[in-house]
Image 1 (cartoon, rainbow over the protein chains, first blue to last red):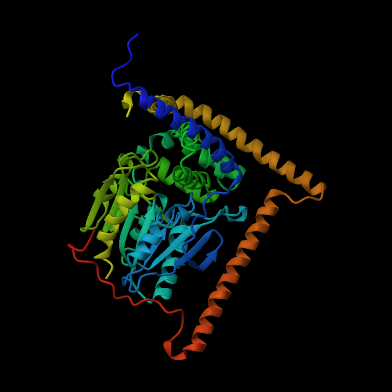
Image 2: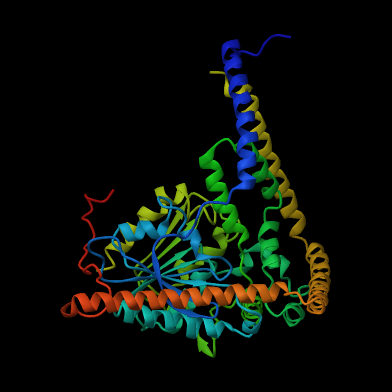
Length: 360
Length: 126
């Protein structure tokens, strides 16, 4: 047999040498991996302004010499922890905002306790968010507040904004926010009303267990966990890769339970009846139509989002009542569009240039 | 440098990537069927019920053994977190009191930067 063209024995020898070195490094680093803890996340200095059960309001300490007049309130998704937006220094969205002169607050969630199973959508939209807005106004001394909602935090922000449409919300930024829940095809099939007895599940478990939520996320890409572990072993000699893997893996598996009644409402109103898309959504008897929102809005969506596909998110800009509205479709997935190296290059500078001129 | 097409490491990584894509796509097609939804929810419903019953049994067993259950440990951890949160609030208040006693004329609270920032002009933005 002839040697393939382009094969050069010197480079093969270099390659073999490098692979042997990597194999040794893998063994050493592999032991280190299991014996060490991951990087410390969410460490940007902050003060706790309020804790009420599952609701936590933080204020990040400003680091710029002067800040924009309008503070930002970030509303996290209720299934995940807020530290995805505050990874390690240099890869923290919060740190980026602080350096660019924003005054940043975050509404983050902790696991609802069994006795909080009766929290309803009303508690989140008509109580927790307005309470946090009031506290931000009080703490900052400013009437106006910009809101950033990530994933389901975006849905909650939209519901808040559509009910309190003449309230203090000055700008709204949504990241990967679903509107048409029929287009979340697999979730829609998992929760098919003919087979998914949400009442029985919630009546049995109280709160929606985090294991079930994590399983349903992982089922969207069932081969990816094994493949990512193979890739981790391949790259375990590379400290930067391992650090990034550990940060994302820890966050991805740190799923929160959902309050039972709140999950029941999400399933029935959004997954089954698609009320947000159909303009029939109400919260506590109050109409929540997207057309009611008139403030400037930016919606950032990811090109390869397997959790909230573009077809589920694209209707936001069409249905919103604002005249100052923009949608940006960025390369990346559901998480990489907001955190990590991809976000640093794409989303964060875009958001800064959009929000800066609307924050004075 | 060797041709990338001949590099076994690159071939291996490409193969893993393709296998992942292929498996995900195949599984996604299978999971999109109503039969899958029915089977998944039958199993899921039964498992959730069994897990709850097992949890309750285990709690009774731990009580009999005079040991704390996981729920009690989580409850204690959360109470400690709440105490830490309150300590933080007290610390912030103490810092404010200390700051005010040093500079009573400067008003209340920790000093904050002025809210005077303007966005950079188009040319300045990176």
